[in-house]
Length: 238
Length: 273
Image (cartoon, rainbow over all chains, first blue to last red):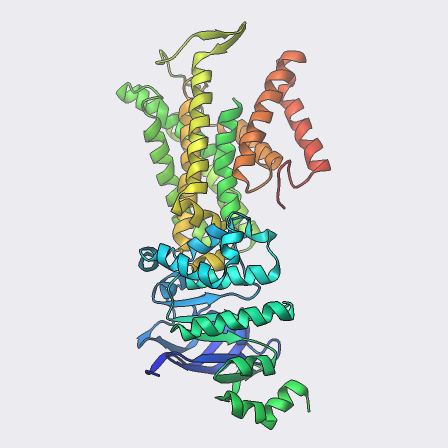
């Protein structure tokens, strides 16, 4: 595929007085599907939150499509085509499904293509049409996750980051979401996602990064990582 | 009066719902709006009804400036800092008004509307009636703006989840400033309307602000439509208590109602929390 779309280097990030990331890095090629792996508290979410502008790194550089974005406010980064679906969906609970999804295209650049994109995400997730007028908080976890991903797609992103898309969902729903994410990727959107289940993550992704205690300890193609004794040590305690 | 209370309370509720900051200077904002109406009349012979947009605009600017000059600086700070910032602003504005304009009670004479209207045997003051209708109109406008317009939905989104809103491309800092401007414009309109028939003096905000807090708590914090219902309840309770018991006791009954609601339904009558 054509070139690097996202590159982060030397990221040091603090939450309050507590340093969560140490010299973290992430490089993603256009069209890839990359998994971030690691135990709880390893700093995976912090890494994504820093890339999307919710957090400011104390040190380090982030470039997206060749331009530096570190330190820009989140709303300006979305407008450049980098969408972020937060952990636990984080829909606007008292707004309807339709209102939630439409707000995904709030950025001026996305607004002109809103109706076309809305039709596209409704084709991907038929639930959006069925539940359009319902407040988002009345949906099940799986349905909420679909709305959250659809809302992210409304920004017409080149890169979509999804934090734990399968957390707490029934296996049948997970299969559905995996299919949807594959399709989004096939249609040209680069994807980075967080997932704790190594097998699931690496069966979906082409490459993976492993974080432990705030540092990137491993990176590689999915097949290599699956065979790696280091991965076994971290995730199976073996 | 209920509709005017509701409008004052809506401004308070909007700001609180957006960023969990209680504006303790809300009553003083109302007082300033009344002075805007007074000086528009005293200096340019503009009736409060005519200068209403002026009062709304002046207060919107004040709200915007308060956010940028004061609130933004204490947002990351402890709760106490936020309370004292707006409380201090209240004291400053009240004392400033006393210093500049004296403590005299002022009234606007020969208003455009005066006299009373008999509706089915009940006399209603014409200015009061106009105030109610216009306050209701402003309230409905606010509601439609919040629930229908793109910017209104962005405001709601910011109130419900600040981080997720930022990831939609919403400039949450701008939304906060806008929330302060709109919330303050609500008291601007309310103040302009009250100036038609109420005394204007530096302390005038106190009683109304207290009723606004009661109205907001009664309806449920951060829920704008519920504020209208609560405002009407407060207004009606006041009138009925004044009629049935004695006018001197009317606020006692309102606050008794408030205490009862807070005891049995602390989230407010229609509250989410």
